[in-house]
Image (cartoon, rainbow, N blue to C red; front, side, top):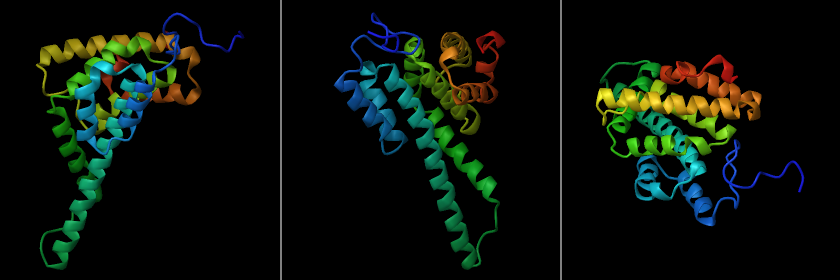
Length: 213
């Protein structure tokens, strides 16, 4: 008993389940969180997407943007090392680190945008959005914002412009509705993260009404 216990009978606004996550979902979450790189992560999504619950989907989005930015940093670091070696040999010219980093992010984002497994993850977000708890909602929104604004991986190039606009509008509306459902349970940091995501991704900001907060 007690008021702190989660409600029975399906997912609540906190995204709880009557029996809790299965051992399979816990293991799958660990695999997603510790995937060695973007390719390994998307391989899991592609092979096991049908098994993923809402927590798994949120973890996949969170891991994806982190791995993509890490890969971009590694590329930029390697490029700067090559330039330093070239200068020592009297080759090339100095470029700014900001330009190197932007070029690396564009390279990783372009590859990700063309990856046929990315749309599958986006569809899973759309399917599971109503089961996301407050923290997961803000996390997913942040991840989409980073993929769109920082990495330019969204909109995915695998879709036609017409389909992408329709899908993004539906996804943004669903996330907006979920924010309105879970906003009272968000702490200040989670609210700030979700709000910042709207600034990064116009499609989210356009549909998130002031009443949601």
